[in-house]
Image (cartoon, rainbow, N blue to C red):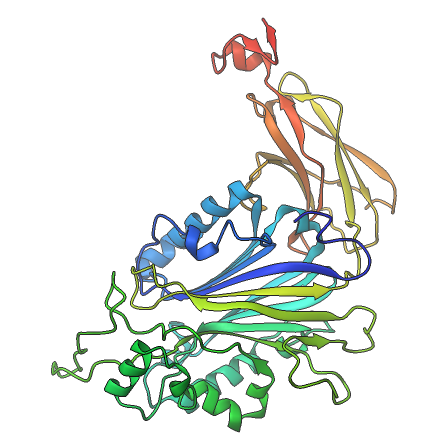
Length: 470
């Protein structure tokens, strides 16, 4: 994001792109450009991707614990070259939640925590439930909750009970936001499995084919349940102006043509189309009842005396992408504008390289604590190639000072051994990683590491290096 668009002082805007997709154990498609709308303007600042039914057989799940799963890989490989870094992820069997941010925002995403709640099969295997990521974004507490709730037409009440249980069961170890609903903004999304009640299959399909989707809204189970459950009324959702995203024949845009087999082996009824895949959001209510105009499209939060730092959430798009056919669900996309005032705009740590870096000699860096925080001798400073994928994607690292923790504004110098510096050089950044905050809280400007003489000697590059013939 350009500093002009996300300016210091006054109102600041950022763009959030969200995806929810039940991938039905499929492998990812090669091209996810359409899904991420990579070339859209204004550019995106945060990507949040929630997947359900990622392949989670025991052997596959164990292998994914050792290395990133194939879906995480395709998102990282696509977004990293465009300057996006994976902030964090959380996995519970088939449920996967990924958060990416433009590199410029990393020092202002703090206090990252993840958790999960099982609800399926008595909570043991975790085939249903919710996974969440929460963090402070420029001082605003936000939470993203990806759910996969109970299936089938007759379990609408159970879905509501499961969601309420997840809201109550998940907790975090910060005093001001111990539970999901304590966050200033909550995004709730996933395969929520709510169906379209009462209408017959013929009426459903004729309404969809004629584009009269509004005829189906009053029988959508989630819309119906919101009228009955006050806690659901706190969540907002855009109009369902896209076709129901379930259930399709794979590799087509044709709704389910094959009736499922029952456990006795006889054919059952074909599955009715439904808006099972949804994205909603909630703004923490004010302490006092709001007198805001109910017809206002955007919603605002000025909670707990923080009127000086409100946040405005406006949904810009809510749609599906029918071009993907690897699953019997179509992915749902929502984009939001977050209009907020930053509570701070200075990184906690300033980190910088000193002098010229190459693998021919040890290098120096400095870091300075600019504001008090819970630092640790387990904090470290990583060397990252421009276009890095995550905080763990470093070339090398050094621990911060191992004895007394530094004072504010004290300049600390650390050295990096030449054997740890890349021989071929390139563009790099230094990042200070906070163990307690689980995030990079300081980034240097990008700088050039020169190709080393050792690289020439080892035959890795021609003898004409750094513009000089050696």
